[in-house]
Length: 392
Image 1 (cartoon, rainbow, N blue to C red):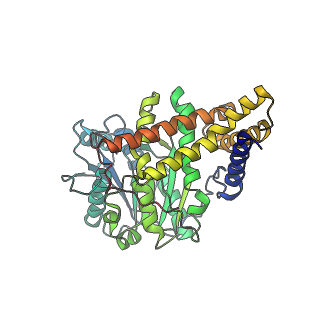
Image 2 (image 1 turned 30 degrees about the vertical axis):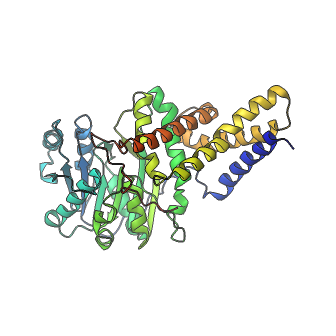
Image 3 (image 1 turned 45 degrees about the vertical axis):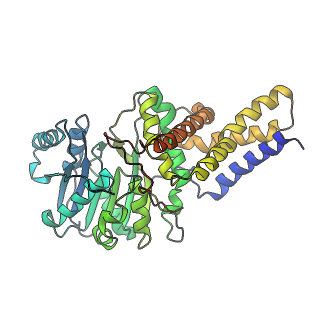
């Protein structure tokens, strides 16, 4: 038996295992609407913002105009912006006549050992006690997310109906530019493979994941873990927070129906940088994990098309298992493409997209070794002591 045949069988086995044993990660299941609660609890949204002039007005407006029957306030933490982010947020509040809902907090200097976003979130969480002491939930969201008017009501209804300490939604990322259409759906596909949503919601599983653009957290649960101090050094803060919360209570993660990211990725470079910022952190800064990732990505995504083509050209026996593995890959990816309204034919290009992500992961390690890891908004934070704590 030749080694290409053995390798092609191994790739096929990997895809059979992923499809059958990985929590149905490839399926796209949108959450059903929950029955409204008998009373609507008080909620405060906390929005960390650092140099978000291009998108903050639209994001803040989407929060301030929520159709929510309970008490609701928005705290925007201005994290040392120098582009007028806070002024634009105030102007947006005035434009929609909701100045009373918006409260702006100026961030204090970043302490040693904290990641920037988590420090800003902590200051916002602390401000909740003074602004709305009886708030039952804190809605952690970002300054580049647009929420539909019914978003908060839907999150609260779901959290109350199922008794969840955390309800998170992965908002729709932009797919307007050619680079976004080709590369962005794969980000969601790979994320779901790492953190199968079905496993996240299962209290019997250790898997804990969340999406940083939209997290509704029960305030009592957040206080129980010490607020954001529990993950003070995390760069992958959403999954780290989900892991900390799931140790004490149930959580849930879904794809969003209507919430969208407002941040554009007009070329391949911004997407590369997005991946490289935290990919090596995801691997806990381990060279062994990096080597394993290279091997796994090669067997899973690159071997099937390479051996399919070479086998077909030479009439080799390894063609059929390699081709079947490639077909299974395409079938697994198509639901994500459909969710993003993209052509199913793009699924055949997933091996090339995976190679792009693998290259960005290797670059993430390189940046870390050069002391430039976790680069975001002028800060390099990816040090060996700043590790996320995701649970698999």
